Amino acid sequence: MTGDIHDLWRRGGGRPGDDPDRSLEHDVGDALASRRPDVTWDVKNQATVHLWYQDRFGTAVEPLVSIADAVGTWPETATAVAMSLGRDGSIDVVAPLGLDDLVGGIHRRNPRRVSLAEYRARMRRKRPALRWPGVRVQVE
Image (tube, rainbow, N blue to C red; front, side, top):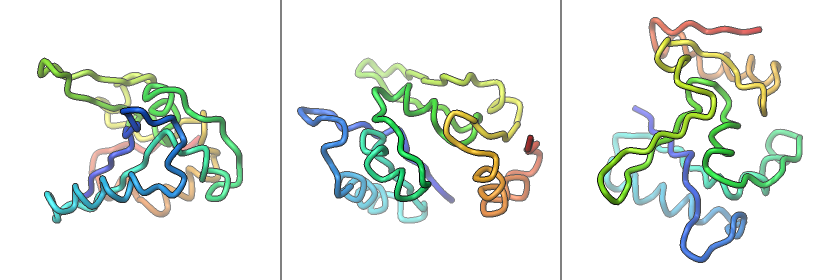
């Protein structure tokens, strides 16, 4: 089982990008792993993506300004969804690319930040059609 926490945004006096060593990601990942050791967690502080993105992917990116902005850059359209629990118990959904692909079981790249070459490499690594039978992978 895997769990992706990509919608983390540092709050409480911090400025976006003020965690250059990514210690917040590690702390949150450790806390999640201690609660659910059966899940492989992948935690990314979206406020710091611009600090490491070029080293990993070869292209500089601007700092993200909000969770909605961050979610709108996620690699696949069906995964570009975030939820948060409001203080009143309500669930807020952020889906800047819509929910049609998620509900329809369609796996396609989000061209905002993922090149076709990178998407094809992701498909070879992640093999979504094998991982989730019934998913339709659309490669341009």
